[in-house]
Amino acid sequence: MPKDHIDAKGFVVVLILTVLWGLNYSAIKFSNTGLSPIFTTFIRSVIASLLGVIYCIYIKQPVFHRGIILFHGFITGMLFGLEFVFFYLAVLYTGASRTAVLVYLSPFVVALGAHLFLKERLNLLKTIGLVLAFIGVYLVFYGKPLKHTRYMLMGDIFAIIAAFLWGATTIYIKKYLAESVHPINTFIYQLIFSVPIMFISACLIEDRWIINLSLEVAGSVFFQSVIVAFMSYLAWFKLIHDYPVAQLSIFTFLTPVFGVLFGIVISKEQMTAGLIGGLILVCIGIYLTNSQSAGFLNSKKLLRGRD
Image (cartoon, rainbow, N blue to C red; front, side):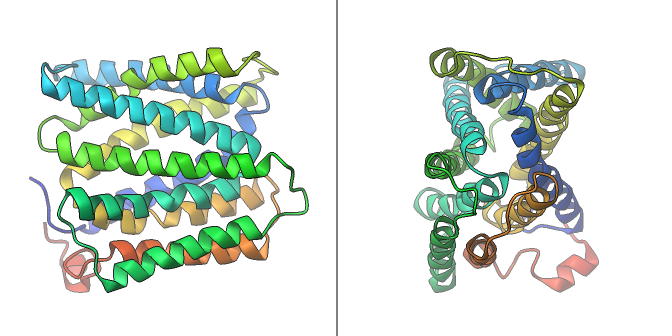
């Protein structure tokens, strides 16, 4: 049964997911050294799709629906596919840390979309959060690292496009699929219908798919495909079905924090004042924009762990 707030169990799951997603930026940055980015996301979706179909058969859930639900699943997959084409290209051209911050414009797209389409109204506090977030994005653009290249701006723009597509996908799922299908079907629709988009994009954009395949690169693709694309996204779609989407978005502010941290530690990226300032404002903005008095922020409900 859907819940009206995020309980302790939901918070723990979101926390684990944000760590995995934050690490994923550096994993993508690493796999780009051995495989082209769009081809990588194509392989990732193929593997995760196969695992999703196997899981669907295991729980005896129909893989596809008919009629309008299948159409909504197709649209969801199209949005998802385009999102990850731009996302992987963003990590190729700009830093993992910068991508982690810029992609998290998505919760603000969700907040605006929820206001327009889901009747989850914006108030003054949430509007202030939106303003802070966009100031944070400006600081990220302003705080260029010493190794800045002319391609970094293109990567930053790709990250922002991915953020808008991610937000649009979340709203579309919540409006048209969340109450109609099992979470595994939402998951499968996104992955399966995104595969053709990714394959066509790889054929049109990338001349060489395999650059330097190694055991480490294969391990990175495994992490992206099995751990992130299959296990974490399945858990996320279950959360979308069970909890208010705007309240969920509050806690996703942890992902850019982990993304920046892993980018600095693992990818050895420069920690600029603009990056840190932008990260702080984006995180505060996410918190303000998506906070609700009846949600997980109610400490009594947290302590009692009530559904």
